[in-house]
Length: 72
Image 1 (tube, one colour):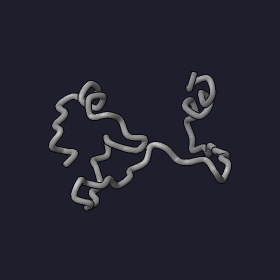
Image 2 (cartoon, rainbow, N blue to C red; image 1 turned 90 degrees about the vertical axis):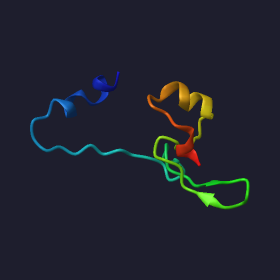
Image 3 (cartoon, rainbow, N blue to C red; image 1 turned 180 degrees about the vertical axis):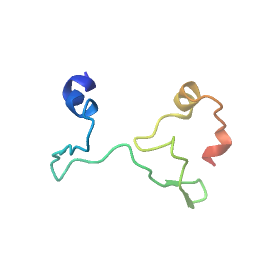
Image 4 (cartoon, one colour; image 1 turned 45 degrees about the horizontal axis):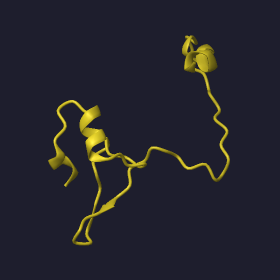
């Protein structure tokens, strides 16, 4: 489906511009967002743990070599 929409761009051999039109209230997702620890301090999670956040069990299911210590 993606190739049908931008196939012309993927097939282009020279530089090309793709204009993406968004409304001002569109939220760019996924994005890195800080989380709060139980003690109230904040930390920035690793890139694979972006907003909207997945449960740790889902991350473990999808990741190869996942280490839950990466999230602390």
